[in-house]
Length: 418
Image (tube, rainbow, N blue to C red; front, side, top):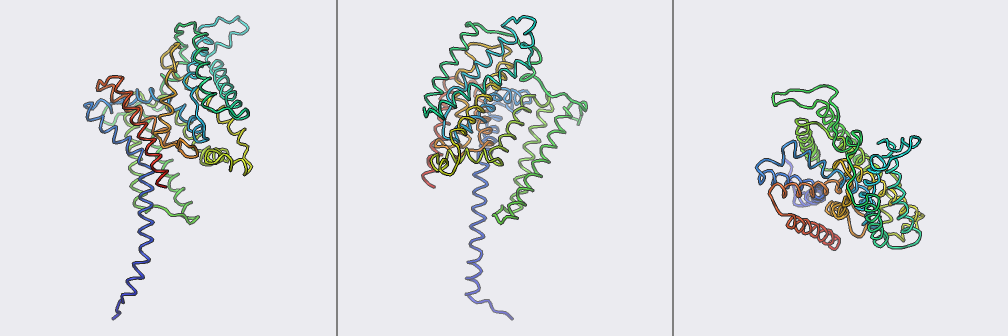
Protein backbone atom coordinates (compact mmCIF):
# COMPACT_ATOMS: atom_id res chain seq x y z
CA UNK A 1 0.00 0.00 0.00
CA UNK A 2 1.31 3.45 -0.96
CA UNK A 3 1.26 6.23 1.59
CA UNK A 4 0.86 9.82 0.32
CA UNK A 5 3.01 12.20 2.33
CA UNK A 6 2.24 15.83 3.06
CA UNK A 7 5.07 16.88 0.77
CA UNK A 8 3.34 15.07 -2.15
CA UNK A 9 0.11 16.91 -1.43
CA UNK A 10 1.99 20.21 -1.29
CA UNK A 11 3.65 19.55 -4.66
CA UNK A 12 0.32 18.56 -6.21
CA UNK A 13 -1.37 21.69 -4.86
CA UNK A 14 1.49 23.86 -6.08
CA UNK A 15 1.24 22.32 -9.55
CA UNK A 16 -2.53 22.79 -9.66
CA UNK A 17 -2.36 26.44 -8.60
CA UNK A 18 -0.91 27.78 -11.89
CA UNK A 19 -3.50 25.78 -13.85
CA UNK A 20 -6.34 27.24 -11.78
CA UNK A 21 -4.90 30.72 -12.19
CA UNK A 22 -4.58 30.23 -15.97
CA UNK A 23 -8.16 28.94 -16.22
CA UNK A 24 -9.52 31.88 -14.22
CA UNK A 25 -7.57 34.38 -16.33
CA UNK A 26 -8.87 32.76 -19.53
CA UNK A 27 -12.44 32.91 -18.22
CA UNK A 28 -11.98 36.56 -17.22
CA UNK A 29 -10.56 37.37 -20.66
CA UNK A 30 -13.51 35.63 -22.34
CA UNK A 31 -16.01 37.60 -20.28
CA UNK A 32 -14.12 40.80 -21.05
CA UNK A 33 -14.03 40.07 -24.79
CA UNK A 34 -17.71 39.19 -24.97
CA UNK A 35 -18.98 41.54 -22.27
CA UNK A 36 -20.12 44.09 -24.83
CA UNK A 37 -22.07 41.46 -26.77
CA UNK A 38 -23.69 40.26 -23.55
CA UNK A 39 -24.63 43.87 -22.80
CA UNK A 40 -26.30 44.16 -26.21
CA UNK A 41 -28.23 40.91 -25.69
CA UNK A 42 -29.32 41.98 -22.19
CA UNK A 43 -30.43 45.36 -23.53
CA UNK A 44 -32.48 43.72 -26.30
CA UNK A 45 -34.14 41.33 -23.83
CA UNK A 46 -34.96 44.28 -21.55
CA UNK A 47 -36.62 46.25 -24.35
CA UNK A 48 -38.34 43.10 -25.65
CA UNK A 49 -40.22 42.84 -22.36
CA UNK A 50 -40.79 46.55 -21.82
CA UNK A 51 -42.11 47.05 -25.37
CA UNK A 52 -44.42 44.01 -25.11
CA UNK A 53 -42.60 42.04 -27.78
CA UNK A 54 -42.27 44.81 -30.37
CA UNK A 55 -38.46 44.93 -30.43
CA UNK A 56 -37.96 41.39 -31.80
CA UNK A 57 -40.55 41.72 -34.52
CA UNK A 58 -38.84 41.07 -37.89
CA UNK A 59 -39.89 44.41 -39.35
CA UNK A 60 -38.49 46.25 -36.32
CA UNK A 61 -35.17 44.37 -36.40
CA UNK A 62 -34.89 45.27 -40.08
CA UNK A 63 -35.58 48.92 -39.23
CA UNK A 64 -32.80 48.90 -36.62
CA UNK A 65 -30.36 47.61 -39.27
CA UNK A 66 -31.43 50.27 -41.77
CA UNK A 67 -31.29 53.02 -39.14
CA UNK A 68 -27.80 52.09 -37.96
CA UNK A 69 -26.29 51.14 -41.32
CA UNK A 70 -24.68 54.50 -42.08
CA UNK A 71 -23.53 54.85 -38.44
CA UNK A 72 -21.77 51.47 -38.61
CA UNK A 73 -20.13 52.24 -41.96
CA UNK A 74 -18.67 55.47 -40.57
CA UNK A 75 -17.80 53.82 -37.23
CA UNK A 76 -15.43 51.44 -39.06
CA UNK A 77 -13.45 54.37 -40.40
CA UNK A 78 -13.71 56.32 -37.16
CA UNK A 79 -12.24 53.34 -35.32
CA UNK A 80 -9.04 53.61 -37.40
CA UNK A 81 -8.94 57.37 -36.83
CA UNK A 82 -9.33 57.05 -33.05
CA UNK A 83 -6.92 54.11 -32.79
CA UNK A 84 -4.39 56.26 -34.68
CA UNK A 85 -4.75 58.90 -31.95
CA UNK A 86 -6.90 61.39 -33.88
CA UNK A 87 -10.55 62.46 -34.15
CA UNK A 88 -12.76 63.40 -37.10
CA UNK A 89 -15.60 65.83 -36.40
CA UNK A 90 -16.43 66.36 -40.08
CA UNK A 91 -17.88 62.96 -40.96
CA UNK A 92 -21.52 64.01 -40.48
CA UNK A 93 -21.16 67.11 -42.66
CA UNK A 94 -19.13 65.22 -45.29
CA UNK A 95 -21.81 62.52 -45.49
CA UNK A 96 -24.51 65.18 -45.87
CA UNK A 97 -22.47 66.95 -48.57
CA UNK A 98 -21.93 63.72 -50.50
CA UNK A 99 -25.64 62.93 -50.30
CA UNK A 100 -26.37 66.38 -51.73
CA UNK A 101 -23.79 65.86 -54.47
CA UNK A 102 -25.35 62.50 -55.38
CA UNK A 103 -28.79 64.11 -55.59
CA UNK A 104 -27.56 66.92 -57.83
CA UNK A 105 -25.72 64.50 -60.14
CA UNK A 106 -28.67 62.15 -60.55
CA UNK A 107 -31.63 64.53 -60.24
CA UNK A 108 -30.77 68.21 -59.79
CA UNK A 109 -28.33 69.09 -62.57
CA UNK A 110 -29.42 68.78 -66.20
CA UNK A 111 -26.42 67.59 -68.19
CA UNK A 112 -26.00 67.99 -71.96
CA UNK A 113 -26.32 64.72 -73.96
CA UNK A 114 -22.56 64.16 -74.13
CA UNK A 115 -22.34 64.26 -70.28
CA UNK A 116 -25.61 62.46 -69.55
CA UNK A 117 -23.65 59.41 -68.32
CA UNK A 118 -22.75 61.39 -65.16
CA UNK A 119 -26.37 61.02 -64.01
CA UNK A 120 -26.14 57.23 -64.11
CA UNK A 121 -26.47 55.95 -60.51
CA UNK A 122 -23.33 53.80 -60.75
CA UNK A 123 -21.22 56.56 -62.28
CA UNK A 124 -22.56 59.13 -59.81
CA UNK A 125 -21.87 56.72 -56.95
CA UNK A 126 -18.26 56.25 -58.08
CA UNK A 127 -17.82 60.03 -58.34
CA UNK A 128 -19.20 60.46 -54.82
CA UNK A 129 -16.89 57.81 -53.34
CA UNK A 130 -13.89 59.40 -55.07
CA UNK A 131 -14.92 62.85 -53.82
CA UNK A 132 -15.20 61.56 -50.26
CA UNK A 133 -11.75 59.98 -50.47
CA UNK A 134 -10.29 63.26 -51.80
CA UNK A 135 -11.94 65.21 -48.96
CA UNK A 136 -10.56 62.82 -46.35
CA UNK A 137 -7.12 62.81 -47.99
CA UNK A 138 -7.03 66.62 -48.03
CA UNK A 139 -7.76 66.75 -44.31
CA UNK A 140 -5.23 63.99 -43.66
CA UNK A 141 -2.62 65.91 -45.66
CA UNK A 142 -3.06 69.01 -43.49
CA UNK A 143 -3.03 66.99 -40.27
CA UNK A 144 -0.09 64.75 -41.17
CA UNK A 145 2.27 67.09 -43.02
CA UNK A 146 1.41 70.50 -41.57
CA UNK A 147 1.06 69.24 -38.01
CA UNK A 148 -2.28 70.93 -37.33
CA UNK A 149 -4.36 69.00 -34.74
CA UNK A 150 -7.10 66.83 -36.22
CA UNK A 151 -9.67 68.42 -33.90
CA UNK A 152 -9.13 71.84 -35.50
CA UNK A 153 -8.88 70.60 -39.09
CA UNK A 154 -12.00 68.45 -38.95
CA UNK A 155 -13.95 71.09 -37.02
CA UNK A 156 -13.21 73.46 -39.89
CA UNK A 157 -14.21 70.70 -42.32
CA UNK A 158 -17.50 70.25 -40.50
CA UNK A 159 -18.36 73.92 -41.03
CA UNK A 160 -17.10 73.99 -44.64
CA UNK A 161 -19.06 70.96 -45.85
CA UNK A 162 -22.17 71.95 -43.95
CA UNK A 163 -22.04 75.23 -45.86
CA UNK A 164 -21.36 73.47 -49.17
CA UNK A 165 -24.42 71.24 -48.66
CA UNK A 166 -26.60 74.31 -48.19
CA UNK A 167 -25.01 75.98 -51.20
CA UNK A 168 -25.45 73.21 -53.79
CA UNK A 169 -28.98 72.37 -52.60
CA UNK A 170 -29.93 76.06 -52.40
CA UNK A 171 -31.76 75.33 -49.16
CA UNK A 172 -34.21 72.83 -50.70
CA UNK A 173 -34.65 69.06 -50.70
CA UNK A 174 -33.78 67.17 -53.91
CA UNK A 175 -35.33 63.82 -54.85
CA UNK A 176 -36.57 61.22 -55.48
CA UNK A 177 -33.61 59.11 -56.57
CA UNK A 178 -33.57 56.52 -59.37
CA UNK A 179 -34.76 53.08 -58.33
CA UNK A 180 -31.29 51.55 -58.75
CA UNK A 181 -29.85 53.99 -56.22
CA UNK A 182 -32.67 53.44 -53.72
CA UNK A 183 -31.84 49.72 -53.66
CA UNK A 184 -28.61 50.57 -51.83
CA UNK A 185 -30.59 51.15 -48.65
CA UNK A 186 -34.15 49.99 -49.34
CA UNK A 187 -33.45 46.78 -51.30
CA UNK A 188 -33.20 43.15 -50.16
CA UNK A 189 -31.30 40.24 -51.64
CA UNK A 190 -33.42 38.13 -54.03
CA UNK A 191 -34.56 34.65 -52.99
CA UNK A 192 -32.92 32.51 -55.67
CA UNK A 193 -34.20 29.25 -54.10
CA UNK A 194 -37.80 30.30 -53.57
CA UNK A 195 -39.64 30.52 -50.22
CA UNK A 196 -39.51 27.74 -47.63
CA UNK A 197 -42.37 26.86 -45.30
CA UNK A 198 -41.40 25.18 -42.03
CA UNK A 199 -44.87 25.42 -40.52
CA UNK A 200 -44.34 29.01 -39.25
CA UNK A 201 -45.06 30.80 -42.51
CA UNK A 202 -42.97 31.44 -45.62
CA UNK A 203 -39.26 31.98 -45.04
CA UNK A 204 -36.62 33.57 -47.28
CA UNK A 205 -34.60 30.48 -48.21
CA UNK A 206 -31.52 32.31 -49.51
CA UNK A 207 -31.22 34.16 -46.21
CA UNK A 208 -31.39 30.87 -44.27
CA UNK A 209 -28.72 29.30 -46.50
CA UNK A 210 -26.41 32.30 -46.08
CA UNK A 211 -26.99 32.21 -42.32
CA UNK A 212 -25.97 28.54 -42.11
CA UNK A 213 -22.86 29.24 -44.22
CA UNK A 214 -21.93 32.17 -41.96
CA UNK A 215 -22.28 30.02 -38.82
CA UNK A 216 -20.25 27.18 -40.33
CA UNK A 217 -17.55 29.63 -41.44
CA UNK A 218 -17.46 31.18 -37.98
CA UNK A 219 -17.08 27.77 -36.28
CA UNK A 220 -14.40 26.68 -38.76
CA UNK A 221 -12.47 29.93 -38.20
CA UNK A 222 -12.73 29.56 -34.42
CA UNK A 223 -11.49 25.97 -34.50
CA UNK A 224 -8.63 26.92 -36.78
CA UNK A 225 -7.65 29.85 -34.54
CA UNK A 226 -7.78 27.65 -31.44
CA UNK A 227 -5.58 25.02 -33.10
CA UNK A 228 -3.10 27.69 -34.18
CA UNK A 229 -2.84 29.06 -30.64
CA UNK A 230 -2.28 25.57 -29.24
CA UNK A 231 0.36 24.87 -31.87
CA UNK A 232 2.33 27.99 -30.93
CA UNK A 233 2.11 27.31 -27.18
CA UNK A 234 -0.43 29.99 -26.20
CA UNK A 235 -2.98 29.49 -23.44
CA UNK A 236 -6.37 28.44 -24.78
CA UNK A 237 -9.73 28.28 -23.08
CA UNK A 238 -11.03 24.83 -22.01
CA UNK A 239 -12.74 23.06 -24.89
CA UNK A 240 -16.04 22.94 -22.98
CA UNK A 241 -16.05 26.71 -22.59
CA UNK A 242 -15.05 27.09 -26.23
CA UNK A 243 -17.87 24.80 -27.39
CA UNK A 244 -20.51 26.49 -25.23
CA UNK A 245 -19.42 29.95 -26.38
CA UNK A 246 -19.48 28.92 -30.06
CA UNK A 247 -22.91 27.28 -29.73
CA UNK A 248 -24.41 30.32 -27.99
CA UNK A 249 -23.07 32.72 -30.64
CA UNK A 250 -24.23 30.38 -33.43
CA UNK A 251 -27.70 30.21 -31.86
CA UNK A 252 -27.90 34.01 -31.61
CA UNK A 253 -26.86 34.41 -35.25
CA UNK A 254 -29.37 31.82 -36.47
CA UNK A 255 -32.16 33.40 -34.42
CA UNK A 256 -31.36 36.76 -35.97
CA UNK A 257 -31.21 35.20 -39.46
CA UNK A 258 -34.52 33.40 -38.89
CA UNK A 259 -36.23 36.65 -37.88
CA UNK A 260 -34.97 38.41 -41.02
CA UNK A 261 -35.91 35.41 -43.19
CA UNK A 262 -39.48 35.60 -41.89
CA UNK A 263 -39.76 39.17 -43.24
CA UNK A 264 -38.03 40.10 -46.52
CA UNK A 265 -34.62 38.52 -46.00
CA UNK A 266 -31.23 40.19 -45.73
CA UNK A 267 -31.19 43.91 -46.63
CA UNK A 268 -28.64 44.90 -49.27
CA UNK A 269 -27.07 47.34 -46.85
CA UNK A 270 -26.48 44.53 -44.32
CA UNK A 271 -24.44 42.70 -46.95
CA UNK A 272 -22.41 45.88 -47.52
CA UNK A 273 -21.88 46.26 -43.77
CA UNK A 274 -20.88 42.61 -43.41
CA UNK A 275 -18.32 42.78 -46.22
CA UNK A 276 -16.83 46.02 -44.86
CA UNK A 277 -16.68 44.63 -41.31
CA UNK A 278 -14.88 41.48 -42.49
CA UNK A 279 -12.49 43.63 -44.54
CA UNK A 280 -11.63 45.87 -41.59
CA UNK A 281 -11.17 42.88 -39.28
CA UNK A 282 -8.69 41.51 -41.82
CA UNK A 283 -6.92 44.88 -42.11
CA UNK A 284 -6.58 45.41 -38.35
CA UNK A 285 -5.63 41.85 -37.43
CA UNK A 286 -3.72 40.46 -40.42
CA UNK A 287 -2.11 43.32 -42.34
CA UNK A 288 1.01 45.27 -41.42
CA UNK A 289 -0.92 48.45 -42.26
CA UNK A 290 -3.37 47.76 -39.44
CA UNK A 291 -0.72 46.84 -36.89
CA UNK A 292 1.16 50.04 -37.69
CA UNK A 293 -1.96 52.10 -36.98
CA UNK A 294 -2.16 50.57 -33.49
CA UNK A 295 1.56 51.16 -32.96
CA UNK A 296 1.24 54.79 -34.06
CA UNK A 297 -1.72 55.40 -31.77
CA UNK A 298 -0.02 53.69 -28.84
CA UNK A 299 3.16 55.76 -29.10
CA UNK A 300 3.63 58.02 -32.10
CA UNK A 301 7.29 58.86 -31.39
CA UNK A 302 8.26 55.23 -30.83
CA UNK A 303 6.47 54.22 -34.03
CA UNK A 304 8.34 56.87 -36.00
CA UNK A 305 11.68 55.84 -34.50
CA UNK A 306 10.97 52.22 -35.46
CA UNK A 307 10.71 53.21 -39.12
CA UNK A 308 6.96 53.69 -39.57
CA UNK A 309 6.04 56.57 -41.87
CA UNK A 310 3.42 58.04 -39.53
CA UNK A 311 2.61 60.97 -41.84
CA UNK A 312 1.72 58.71 -44.76
CA UNK A 313 -0.22 56.40 -42.43
CA UNK A 314 -2.28 59.31 -41.10
CA UNK A 315 -2.94 60.48 -44.66
CA UNK A 316 -4.35 57.07 -45.66
CA UNK A 317 -6.41 56.71 -42.47
CA UNK A 318 -8.25 59.97 -43.18
CA UNK A 319 -8.65 59.08 -46.88
CA UNK A 320 -10.35 55.83 -45.81
CA UNK A 321 -12.53 57.77 -43.38
CA UNK A 322 -13.56 60.17 -46.15
CA UNK A 323 -14.56 57.37 -48.53
CA UNK A 324 -16.62 55.65 -45.81
CA UNK A 325 -18.32 58.94 -44.92
CA UNK A 326 -19.21 59.26 -48.60
CA UNK A 327 -20.68 55.75 -48.70
CA UNK A 328 -22.63 56.47 -45.51
CA UNK A 329 -23.93 59.69 -47.03
CA UNK A 330 -25.24 57.80 -50.06
CA UNK A 331 -26.87 55.15 -47.85
CA UNK A 332 -28.51 57.89 -45.77
CA UNK A 333 -29.78 59.72 -48.85
CA UNK A 334 -31.03 56.49 -50.45
CA UNK A 335 -32.95 55.64 -47.28
CA UNK A 336 -34.63 59.06 -47.18
CA UNK A 337 -35.01 58.99 -51.00
CA UNK A 338 -33.94 62.63 -51.02
CA UNK A 339 -31.08 64.93 -50.04
CA UNK A 340 -31.89 67.60 -47.47
CA UNK A 341 -29.82 70.57 -46.23
CA UNK A 342 -29.86 69.20 -42.67
CA UNK A 343 -28.78 65.66 -43.61
CA UNK A 344 -25.83 64.40 -41.57
CA UNK A 345 -26.07 66.98 -38.81
CA UNK A 346 -25.07 65.42 -35.49
CA UNK A 347 -24.16 62.04 -37.00
CA UNK A 348 -20.52 62.52 -36.03
CA UNK A 349 -21.54 62.41 -32.36
CA UNK A 350 -23.34 59.08 -32.77
CA UNK A 351 -20.39 57.65 -34.70
CA UNK A 352 -17.82 58.72 -32.11
CA UNK A 353 -20.06 57.51 -29.28
CA UNK A 354 -20.44 54.08 -30.93
CA UNK A 355 -16.66 53.68 -31.20
CA UNK A 356 -16.01 54.70 -27.59
CA UNK A 357 -18.86 52.54 -26.24
CA UNK A 358 -17.32 49.73 -28.29
CA UNK A 359 -14.16 49.89 -26.19
CA UNK A 360 -11.82 52.19 -28.14
CA UNK A 361 -9.43 54.24 -26.04
CA UNK A 362 -9.44 58.04 -26.09
CA UNK A 363 -5.65 57.95 -25.97
CA UNK A 364 -5.41 55.82 -29.12
CA UNK A 365 -3.78 52.48 -29.74
CA UNK A 366 -6.72 50.34 -28.57
CA UNK A 367 -10.04 49.31 -30.06
CA UNK A 368 -11.64 46.49 -32.03
CA UNK A 369 -13.80 46.42 -35.16
CA UNK A 370 -16.34 44.10 -33.53
CA UNK A 371 -16.57 46.46 -30.56
CA UNK A 372 -17.36 49.44 -32.79
CA UNK A 373 -20.09 47.48 -34.59
CA UNK A 374 -21.64 46.22 -31.34
CA UNK A 375 -21.36 49.72 -29.86
CA UNK A 376 -23.32 51.11 -32.82
CA UNK A 377 -26.02 48.47 -32.37
CA UNK A 378 -26.22 49.27 -28.65
CA UNK A 379 -26.92 52.89 -29.57
CA UNK A 380 -29.44 51.76 -32.19
CA UNK A 381 -31.31 49.43 -29.83
CA UNK A 382 -31.43 52.16 -27.18
CA UNK A 383 -32.81 54.68 -29.69
CA UNK A 384 -35.34 52.21 -31.06
CA UNK A 385 -36.47 50.89 -27.69
CA UNK A 386 -36.85 54.33 -26.12
CA UNK A 387 -38.77 55.58 -29.18
CA UNK A 388 -41.19 52.63 -28.96
CA UNK A 389 -41.68 53.37 -25.25
CA UNK A 390 -42.44 57.01 -26.08
CA UNK A 391 -39.43 58.48 -24.26
CA UNK A 392 -38.97 62.13 -25.25
CA UNK A 393 -36.03 62.98 -27.48
CA UNK A 394 -34.49 65.20 -24.78
CA UNK A 395 -34.38 62.28 -22.34
CA UNK A 396 -33.02 60.03 -25.08
CA UNK A 397 -30.11 62.41 -25.66
CA UNK A 398 -29.37 62.64 -21.95
CA UNK A 399 -29.41 58.85 -21.51
CA UNK A 400 -27.09 58.39 -24.50
CA UNK A 401 -24.74 60.99 -22.99
CA UNK A 402 -24.68 59.16 -19.66
CA UNK A 403 -23.92 55.85 -21.43
CA UNK A 404 -21.06 57.47 -23.37
CA UNK A 405 -19.64 59.08 -20.23
CA UNK A 406 -19.85 55.76 -18.40
CA UNK A 407 -17.97 53.99 -21.21
CA UNK A 408 -15.15 56.55 -21.10
CA UNK A 409 -14.94 56.45 -17.29
CA UNK A 410 -14.75 52.65 -17.48
CA UNK A 411 -11.91 52.94 -20.01
CA UNK A 412 -9.97 55.35 -17.78
CA UNK A 413 -10.56 53.12 -14.74
CA UNK A 414 -9.21 50.07 -16.56
CA UNK A 415 -6.12 52.01 -17.68
CA UNK A 416 -5.38 53.27 -14.17
CA UNK A 417 -5.92 49.79 -12.74
CA UNK A 418 -3.58 48.32 -15.35
